Structure formats: structure tokens, C-alpha cells
Length: 240
Length: 314
Image (cartoon, rainbow over all chains, first blue to last red; front, side, top):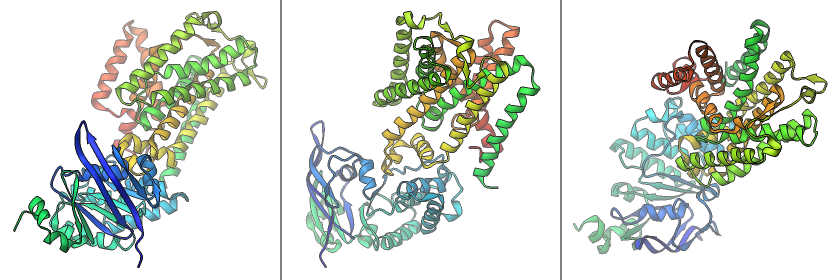
């Protein structure tokens, strides 16, 4: 089967007053893949993903999404093209209800009225197991539930590319198992780019892994390749 | 009963109550109420930007004055009759809001407050400098003969009251509808968490600009109506004081509620009215009321009602 590239970056760099947070990264993400982006703290993962999603302006290089150069597009237009993004630090509308949080995400995509939005919200809440809490204020939810809500807000947009920045951070073990299941299910419908620290999650979900170190790509490969890669072991996993 | 039906009934009830009040209260109070209704439109306009979008402007007097002078000057110098002059008032406020919004929204937070304040000051000074036409601080009276629409003399107390109520009712229902739309809910999202709203794919800059335009146009509609109903246009209405008033009314009544601006305007007006009977230091009492309210009901009267009694309050 021929693979279609959904997202690619060429020579993507970000300089902060002379400091190279991300330097000359080439990146290609085929449609349908679950890609994990790993690397030690400060490797530039969030910055790199920020440049893909438009949150952070790139210093150099280009980003192509769905065959279109989006380097100059602002974030909201990239989202409108079919990206969804969840924040590393949970970011929900904490004074609004769980239902309204998801509805806000759904409404941007669904134009045909309240019933369709409510139906989408119900479906999403079911999927992330928050149906019972629909009327609660999002800020009152536990941390784990807020993370799930954020993923739900991503789902409601039916994205073609779903970018998740450390989604399992702060989740309990049992919640992580549910999350892995959810990713497996999602990967049937959408392409996923995952920044993740939990190696267990990475190994169990990702089809392919990109390792960043000091703002540069250290390695690319399948989970098995990466596990066997000595440079990666030295930089990140710790030599066994 | 669904929330939207409850909300609709509440709004209709408030309007009916206001209509009945005219026949119940004394002439002094109905005169007061007419003024309050016009100022409540001003406050409702302010609330769209401050209460729903989360943008604090300190320059809304400019929009109020744009409506007021748009109407006043076109009657005074262009010889327009009341109805087209009213339209000129609305359009003036719309244009000024669009231009100021476009420029001021390049900033945010405290800078936005300062920029709007400065624009309003510039507007005030312009009115003074153009004293030849505007008669500056002294202002000018709009003659009774010019205050007639479709044969209805708006200087008469009853006509004036119901004209004020009509304007108030239209704006009140418009905002009740607006906040239930996708657009209105997106404004709330921007107020609550702009970065998240942006990363959901909403163009927050465009939404903010539209909010400024709606807010400014409503403020201008109040200004034009004020000049028409009370027959006077003067530079006082473009001073900083008149930018602060709607902020106070909205804070007292409940920011981000449809009914809060009315409650706040009524409360503040009568607080000053009653306390000034007893003391010349009536602003001290107003200040005290504000402090108490911020301490014990930081979300205003309507916010308190929403929290304690009716969570569905729009």
C-alpha cells in the first residue's frame, strides 16, 4: 500500500536569542501512523510540535500539511485544516461545564445546529468515559479526568492529525491502560503524533518513533529499532 | 422546562414588568427609569465586551459620544430629521468602534485598557477643539421640534419612556439571543481561556473585533437615544467618567449575565439618587457599596443569583 504523507517538515529550526531550541529538523509523518516523539527534557519536543501546530513561529524551515505549505498560516487556520492539539499542561475551560468544553470543540467543526453538536458531545464523552460528569464544572474534575476531557475536546474536532503533548503525564496506572486502549482505537481513524515520556506507553502505542536530542533528530525507527539503538540508549534510555 | 425557554420567559417577564412599572410609579421615577433604560443599553453594550469577551475597555465613552454626536450634529448642522439622524448616530458608532477595535486589539490586557482610554481622551479633546460645531463642554440642546419620529413627539414623558423601553427591549433580546449562539459561546471561551480557544481553531482576533464592534455600536445607540430622548448633547458624556460608569454598572449588576447591566444601572442610579438626599458625599456611599459588593458578591447581583439560586441564568 502506498503511504500518503500527511505532514512534513523541512529544515525546521527555532532560535531563542541565539540558543537553538530546534535545529534543522526534517520530519515526515505518513497518514494513519501513530508516531511518538521522545527525547530527554529540553530536547525541543514541545517547541518542535509548537511549530507544527502554529503555536510557535519557526525561525527557519517549512511545514507542509496535506500537500499545502502551512508555514505562514496562523494556528487557528491549521486547526481548521484538520489538526487538533492537546496541551502539555492541562488547558481546559475550567469555569465551564464538561459538556460545554467539548461542545466548544465540536461547534467549530459542526455547523448544522445544536442537535448535531449535542450528539457529537455525547458520543465523545462516552468514549472518554466522562458521560456521568457532563454537567460538572471542568475545573472541579480530578487531574486525570481533565486530561481525558482535553483528549475528548480533541476528538470532538474529528481531526486528521491529533497532536498530544504528554497526555499521560500525571495519570494513574489504570488510567494509562485506558489511554493506551483509546489511542489504539483512535489510530484506526486518525494520524497521531504523541510526545511521551512514559516508555511503556510509547512502546505499546507507537508504530514509529522519532528521537530528539539537543534540538536535533537523533534517530528514527520502529520501537524495536529504537530500543536497539545505542545512541538513543546513551542519550535517553540509559544503557542497560 | 428547557434552559432556553426559561431564559426567554425571564427576558419577556422583565420587559413586561418594565412596561407595567410606568403606570405604577410616580412621574419622577418613570422619568428616572427612562434614563436608566437608555443607560442600561450602554451597560449591556459594555457587557458584551467586558462580561462576555473578557476585554476591559476604559474608553467606551467615545462610542457613546459617537452615537450622541452622530445624531446631534446631523440634526444641528445637516438639518436631518430625527429618524435618519438616529441612523447616522448608529453608523458613526459602528465606524468608530471598527476603527478603534482594529487598532486597540493589537494590544491586550493593561495595554488595551490604556489604549482605549487614550483614544477616548483624544475623542473628548476633539469634541472640545471642534467647539465651533459641538459647542464643547456647554453642549447644545436638540429642539423639541427635532425630536419627532413618525409623528411621535419623543419629548413627551410617555413616548419617551416607551421609546427607551423599545430600544432597551430590542437590545436586551438581541443580547439574550447572541449569547446563546455559537458566536456568543465562543466569546465566553475567549474570555475563559484564549489560548485554548485559539488551539480549538477559533480566530480569536476576528471574534474580538466583532465583539468590539457590537459593543461599541450598542453604546453608540444608547448615546444617540440619550440625545434624542433628553434633547441634549455635550462633551461631558465623552469624559473618562462616562467610560467608568458602564464598568461599575456591569460589575455591580453581574458581568457576563444578560440581566446584570440593568440591575447594576438601576441600583447605582438609585443609590446615588437616594444618598444624595442625605449627604453631599454620596460618591462615598457609592464607593462603599462597591467595596462591599466586591467583597461579598464579586460576581455582582446577577452573578450571586446565578450561583445561589438559578444556575441557568443566562
